[in-house]
Structures are given as C-alpha cells and as structure tokens.
Image (cartoon, rainbow, N blue to C red; front, side, top):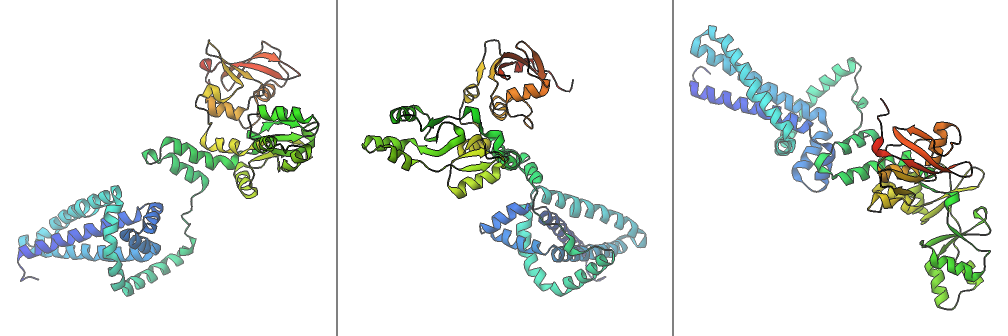
Length: 424
C-alpha cells in the first residue's frame, strides 16, 4: 500500500466515498418508496419496479446487504485516509484526517444522497435495484449469516419478525391519504372518495323519502284514474298500493303500462301482471351494505320498514348515488324544492326538508347525527312545539318559526348570512 502513489490513493478514496453515497442514497430511496404506487408500477410491467418489489419483499435481507456494503466501504475509506494522512503529515495528521473524512462522509455520502433519494425515490431506487438483485445473490451466504445473528439478538430482546404489522390502511388512514393527495386527485374526485368511505356511517334512514311524502297510485281507483296518474308522474317506477301505503302491492314501470295502453292490451289483469313485487329493507341498514344489496337483487327502489314491518320511507339507487357524487341539480337553490330563497338573503325551508340534503346542497353546517328534518331539529332543540314567530339559534344559525301545523313546524326561515360562531 505504501508503494502506491498518492494520486491512486486519493482516487480510490473518492471511489469509496461515491460507493458510500450510493449505498446510503439507495437505502433511503428503497425504504421511502410508495408501496401502493410500486405495486401498481410492478403490475403494469415496469422492470425496475418489479425488481424493487422483490427486494422489499424481504427487507431484512436488503438492509443487511446495504449495511454490509456501506460499512465495508466506510471502514476501507477510513483506512485509506489514515494511510494518506501518515504519508503526508505523519502520525500527527491522523486526527485531522479523521475529522475531515467525517465531515466529507457526512455531507457527500450521507446527507446529500439521502436527501436527494427522499425527494426522488423512484429515480434512485429503480436503477439501484438492478445492482442489488445480482449482488444479493452473490453475497447471500454472508447476508444470511448476518441476518441470522441479528435476528437472534432481536429474539433475545423479545422482538420477533412476525410481529410486524401489515401495510393495509384503515378507513381513517385512507381518508388521510385521500385528503392529502393534493393535485394528484381532483377536488371533486377527492370528495367522492371521501363520500364512499362515509357510506358505512350513513343509513337508509338518513336519505329515505319519509312515509308522508311518498308518492304512489291507489289501485282501488278506476283504471282511467290510474292511467291519468301514471301519465302525470315524473317517475319511471311508481309505487302502487291498495288504499294506503300500509297495503303495498309493488312497483309499476310506467312505460310498460303506457306501451300496453298503446297496444290496446291494457286491462286490470294486464295491470296486475305488470306489477313487480315490493322490495323491503330494514330500517338502519348502512348505505354501503344497501348498495351491494341493490346490485345483488337487481333493484333500484326499496321500501324501508321498522321492526314491526310498518313502512317508514322509500329509498332509491339515485338517492344513494347522490351521497357519493352529490346532487344532480346544478343550482343548489333548485336542488331542494323545499328551499325558497328570499330577497333579504334568508331562506324559507319546509319543516319536512331533509337535513342531510340541506347540508349537502346548501352547505349549511347543521347537525345531522340526530333528527332527520328541520322540524325534528327545532323540536329537539326546544323540547316543545314552538309558536309562530319564535326564533331559536341552532348551530349558530338564526331559525325563525314561520308557520306550524298539526303539532309540527310547517315552515321555518333560516338566515345563513347572520350566522354566529357557535363557540362564541
């Protein structure tokens, strides 16, 4: 070693420092790769991603290989620096060489490459995988021996490799990923994904059309009256019953009835044959489960019943989809027929208006974890049936009772522009 010129020693030292930078940077890059993106790229056929995924399948072997290489080149670099220091300045220069080498290694072989790798992990990790794959095969016996001893030490400390948690994300963690996706996911798509995650928290009770607002056709009426009602209905599938909703017969496809009429084949028997049996679902069914049930049963409309079998409301696939994609109406004021904007900036709201629809379309921050309607929210807040003219502050919104009818709030006036901070 003493016979080598200083130029060759310096060149070897620089080469070792570059190797150290490679090991340090590639370690950070491989460990900071987005595992879900890596899996996507590997399934798409990216060769570097495939190699990286195989290496990361056994992280203990990969880390053992990288640390073996990194420690070897760092120790060898330290030895070369010592030889160079002795040849230049004698034994007194060893301390200065050690300090200078530490600074160089820290900056050029640790901090700089690791920072670059953390900022661009794929650009560093994928090329490095082509180096580590054959190197791991070559060094496998030594890597296996090192890992065996390291795992023995860990087991003595009570740490086992089987204790490692999987990479599956919980619902709340996935929500955080979606919220922090930034420009990678458009805002509208972010909102839709969050709504899908929230389907489990929402039940059919929250979105159903309440019993008293269900539109239907009474089959006890004369046939010409039934036809007139079917012609005027805005719905394709119409609920039909005998006398009242308590005696549901099923659902009629209005277009099929009209076709039978045009063909001159419409009779009472034909009408009864076109009725599809009703589809009942229990109250409190989560929307994520009901979405699957709609698909499995090939139905789009269902009647919500309580524990006694009494009809409580009606829910459709369109109602469920609106929880994911939002209202189909473009104008928020037109999205709910129960909301009438006033010139003074206030809104007249029907007492039976659904709270979730108000929150979703009008963007009012009203509580939705209790009553389902404005009337229920007011009555729960006051714990009594209010008189017209009464004003109450709910979630910071001034709510004035305009009209009451049949022991319920018929119409209320909400002034969102006068909202106060509820915490104040």
